[in-house]
Image (cartoon, rainbow, N blue to C red):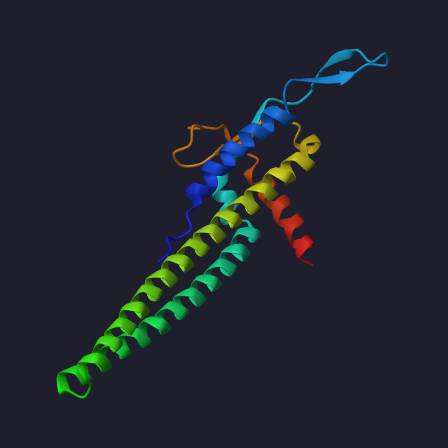
Length: 201
């Protein structure tokens, strides 16, 4: 009923937001106001470029698994509700057909029963569409929440990492190669989990 959560979506959204973040917060030059109110360009001492493997960060981030588990529970409840109503519709349809075949109802009553079944079928389709739409929206919100958490962490700790650019590397991304010495994936992942676990407590 709902497509499986994909890491690709995380990667694309993260790359877009992370690129905007590094340009805005970690550019080579920063502008400050001098003592007389004049604009002064201050040279940044940030170190060049580093990168994180987005797939690895997501797959090892506790927040992702917690939110995915919540979403899976909602999906299971939605499927259970849909299956229950679907089973009831099938039972009513069999009962209708059986009574008509045996001549146990008048034509007028049969027409009313048929109209009721049509209405039930329409409601079932509407319920399915609404549940699917709600789950897709829940997934989109979950994606944005996790990306916001990661980018906010990088912003709050930009002095610690002190890079002009932090790139996101994943399968199919524009970053095709990165020197292992520039890979800060493990450091960022550990820090994210430490922060998240403290927040959960």
